[in-house]
Image (cartoon, rainbow, N blue to C red):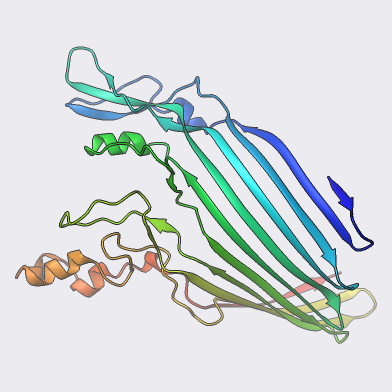
Length: 310
């Protein structure tokens, strides 16, 4: 809902309850309850009686125009997420042995609080631009439905307090700038900055034990470029040449990291291998073995093409 407060200002708000059916894999994982031989926790079984996930969401904001082409919007929002799928804290014992298994239940929960500021310059004098900044905090008891089971199987205690969720990004900044002319050519920049996502440190030497998602990955920054030039062929035919450049500045963002170092460039395991006197068990060199290309963002990519409209 929205209500005008001035001839150029509007207050808007919304509130609602939303429900989502759980993923089928959570309902029907191992429906025949067949587990292998052995002791300890042998796996997870689905639960066809899982309740729908419930989200209570609300926001309130104000939008104000300063001229015909410039406006701002400030919005605060919250989400209360309940009945998320998790695993039972108590293991289910198999009859006649020391083995057990876990089962999905509606045990996980989370909450999100945030504020978004947006500055918009609509197209005028051949150019347009937008800037939006988001500050957000997303916390819950687990990011993975199997987290409780995995912690118990690993000899750890399940989380009993709110921790940062895997997708919690505190600061996000997006911006666009476009320029278009009457001569049928133009270009646009699309940029994004994001603070680091959380991860759980792993100390191989057991120096310390920290909370889940207690550290942050490095921040990321990316700029894309898009440009075009059109040619009219008659009154209704148009030939358009375009170029798209992804990761314009060829920035090597670290999107994944080694949990023992917090960086994609180094792991303590590599240091230990260099000093154990026997690094030759690997096919490649240590540098090649521990430099994982999937830990980095895609390098610069250029696409050039043409389109024909009629």
